[in-house]
Image: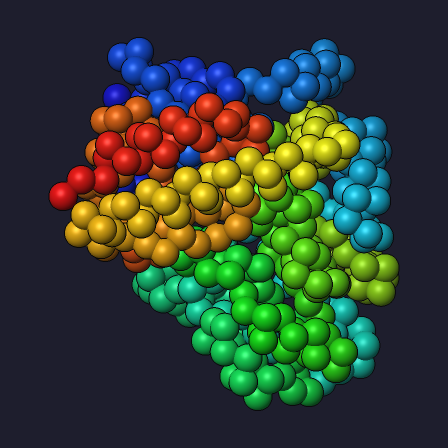
Length: 389
């Protein structure tokens, strides 16, 4: 069936044919509680009515017109995002890696237009993940992502994650920007320490731009509209993607006016970026996120999930299973698991649960933001039945 697909992914022996809410079904009719959600893309689960309605309505108008012209869904989404996140300008692409590539371009242009030296350095962190195109790959702090694809673009320095002293020592006259994830999701769900957050603020005060990669952490995943803002940071550039298009390809770069002023006609572009169907879905996503009380409810249900996970880990550890601690925030959460992660994922699947991994030894849980309390209980129960000696 998949003979003509490039073998760049591992074996895929599960075919998803339908989704509804927090659940998906395979070709054999088996039902699974989906805690992968398209790797944090389906923030409102599957077939969420407001998103589906917005897409259908736009399909009746037009699918594409190009950025030679104004497209109303794109204009409206730019305004909604900037107002919600306190930013000034938006640029739309098709993915997270495109958003980070553009952010890197914009930061470098801003640095040069300020009359800074031609040597430009962007700091990033080990265990980070910023994408698989060339600049985003060079910025990524995981050798397994970069290996075998050199030479990579220069101008990046990868620092040890959560080492505030190393960060302070690295910031200098050539530091154009620091690209960071508030929680390094792919690298093992590593939350930035308060010391590093303080060092980021100091670097920004010295003139370095802060680029917050909120592709997996943003738009409600941690229970906040932006994880970086909840940490007390005020980024100059924000990159978004994953949940933004409600399941359709959409990425965004949000910029402060001072940075946006450095970008001129012809400096950047995208044929498909800001596609009106994807932007219509994005407007529905933002509307759902900003419903009164919704994010507070996310935080409450996420706290219930964490309590259940911590209780489960405590019981399983007492039984001799090497697991814990619980990591992450909101519905970007998980736990360290000392056994065979692949075998554990298969056990979960046998029990009707889809989970993902992060880093070397972390089971990552990315349930829909609107997962119900009874589904959270089912999630804990299925993990319990899967975690055996």
